[in-house]
Image 1 (cartoon, chains in turn orange, yellow):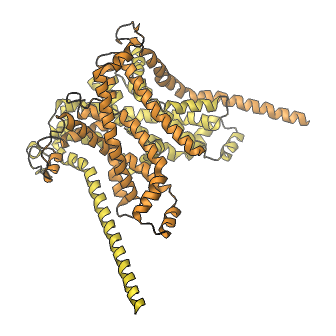
Image 2 (cartoon, rainbow over the protein chains, first blue to last red):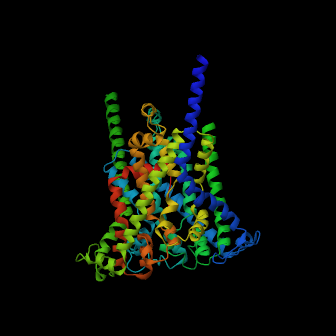
Image 3 (cartoon, chains in turn orange, cyan):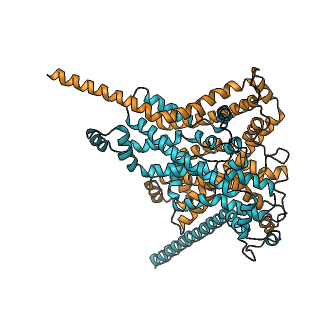
Length: 304
Length: 291
């Protein structure tokens, strides 16, 4: 009798897990189809393509080994583009992080109009990069732009923002910071709220001032957040495209041409799918390293 | 006598500390409000310029307010380019992708959160792994797939690749696992199917998570540029963002039209943002996503 019951239970459980498997297949199938077609296959095919020479309109592609990669590393333009991407990254991230931390810190305190301020700093994040870049082109207008007028008030001579190679990168960086500041502000705010109030109270009893508390409690306690933001920002800046395309089109003289712009140009203007794939795999490798750093850091934090 | 002196000194010190505190509060208020105004200035300048005529635009020093409100700039921009059509395209694409993702992601998330099957955890980790794959790596082969399917320059090309999302699946799965199981067990006893449980029990309880996903996906798709740039050729398939970028090439310095076009391109998202800010911020906190 008892045997029967347990057997029954087992059969029931078997039936249930079979049903589960069937439903799981059904539930996952739309996602699996899309992912296989537009992520899994592309990742593999892109790797294959990076060893091929292929103009996508011819039916034949030829295997050329590492030629795409060697062409990439011996191309002056590639190195310039990589340098531009690095300048953009190093230009935006420290400025962005410092500003967003200060804003998040101030907004974490008692303040009038907190809600309005948060909305103001976050608004640039939600709007389209294309429209944002069109607006900034107008702000950067050398003769009638608001920005030259503004710096003129401080006695600075008008700058030809988008037509001077050095100024154009600077212009791109300023706009990039404006556009993404809100993201980091939100992430820092979340981090700040995670710091227990008791730490500050203890420091208060020891007679610590505002600055001491900021340097000795806030900064160290925030370090996982800070690291996360830094890595995410690096991943983001290495892939910047939209604002470059609309603000400067990579110019003047290629001074703002960045990696994804270079990939886009080779793939969809010159139709060199093989070469473009090789460059995109190079970018993939860099981003992969960033991600692994993040994963490793998180693990070491968790495991002590 | 001595104690009284000490007392007044202490009082004075307290007063000084209070003054310092007050002044830092004032200074930080001024600093943060000027920074906020600087952040908003591009928006304000866009709106003001979109209502000016050329005489008010090409003037130095710049004039803050238009001497007369020129609402016809908006009409003119809609006549200079088929923004109505672009708008329709963008809305069709963004809404289809959003609704599609809500369906596919909640189904996949339910499978990962509630169903027991072999290889579930491994499959889930592979899913998470795809979040790390950057756009530019999948872009070229995805374009080719669409080319082979003959879908280039169609709604299908703009919609289908966005119909699934690892981020969305992850977000919903994390929410689903927090829902207590008792409710479902009762439904199963009453003979409900798995799909019935998802639809009648899980989905109604997961509304906040679904709203976050919906808003985030809508924003991402509506603002997307690179993908539309790659797969669209014809004027009638252009999205708002693509249309605006081409508009800027054509009307390089017609700032009245360009600013009217920009206002048009940012308005829907800004409106949604003002009413549902919470969900945008939740989405950002969950993903750390940007650019």
